[in-house]
Length: 134
Image (cartoon, rainbow, N blue to C red; front, side, top):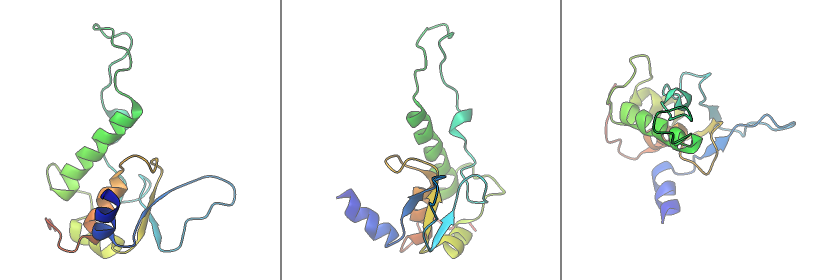
């Protein structure tokens, strides 16, 4: 069911995982949206607090990288899609639709985990955007 919803929201556009493998080329109609571009997620999962082995409660590394990535995507979605704490320098939803609509979006995140590029795809290709903040 999720795959059907996904195609309805984003049409033919999809997320692509960037690679440094020899001979790999970015597919046609694909825009790189990692942190080296204006489209990158300003909420870096590596900056989120995590418990360490020397914490008083001795829980060790309680939060996995996957969990921290998920939280950074949630922060991104709230800020950009719903305009809750949006960084002033981040492109507007109207600019996202103009520049990224109908394009594949490429990031380094694993394809089996939600990524800020998924949120950008939703904004860029939604039939009727829920919010337009600029």
